[in-house]
Image (cartoon, rainbow, N blue to C red; front, top):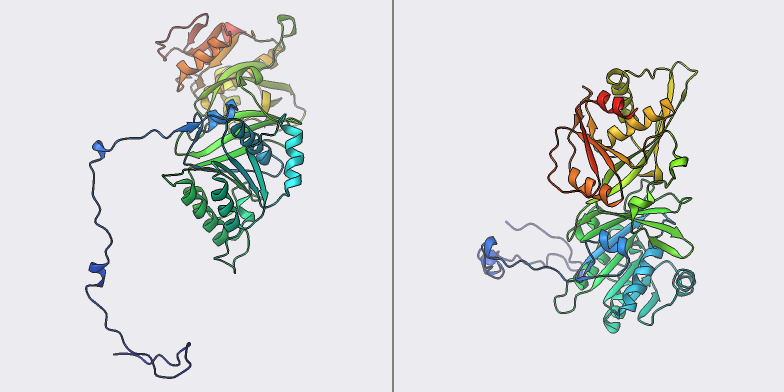
Length: 439
């Protein structure tokens, strides 16, 4: 039965629609091309070619360089250094002979030039800049220049003519612009390296649909307080490297300066006459890299019924747990003491491997007795007061040995098979054994 369709919107006449019989074989006729299935174990794996920028911390985070047919999103709070870092990367690749286009939908060419004059010693000839928010025009410009490395700053500022009813920054425009960029980058005959700047919401998340993160190959995040120099570059997704890898930079008037030896940066150099109480060393892992880290504690008398427990570098619940272990298993009363914990550089303590170092720094502050500056503490501490195994201990010990550390306190349950130059291992079973030996 065919229902009445009413007035035709094209010619205006009534009752002019004619029924069309459905072809039962339509889906079979138009099922697409026949696909060949291949045994997975016979598929040849290909290592994508990478481009090294020469900015060491950036290359590390990217997985030893930028893949030639990749799309990356970089996001951060306003003023964190997104445009500064990408301008430095652009100039570094232009110096290597790559054709580079910096497309900005928010800043004028003169604003970009002012930043470049401030942070770049020499602006390379291969670095082109265009200020426009029409993605169709940008895509044409990329093809005309045959640009190999492209910066889109920021994706929320661009629009495609095919969607005139959608404003810039809307989910439709953002996703469709991103689709076009991915299609351009993945061209097998002429692959591109594309970096997209993404705006951040008030909740410190990438603005727009979550699908935007799934679409691209790599998602980078710059963290750091605006009033401080230290910036960290973190991968929250990387199809070509390790997710969670982190690089460190100093934000200066000359731009983002790579911190190539973080272990040296995140500990305070002191002579033997300058040693202070409340300082303890450990080795944390940021991504796949071990970093020597200084933990500082301050213990002071409390004149209130509820002493303060402030952990700038760790969760308060974790700090309270360690304080309880120290009171019960270390037999040190802390009910009338305020305790403050922080780390040099503000690195967050996300691993249990730093627990022994936190406790020893607290005890050092209580007794006002400095710990040796060539000693580290690498163990978790259980509620029983026993020292527990930690992951990647050998990697951490190698880094400590490289940095000239002489002694490492570890759990006796861990077997070490590597050879160390000058680092001596002290194995203990209980927390109270460590405290008795050290203090």
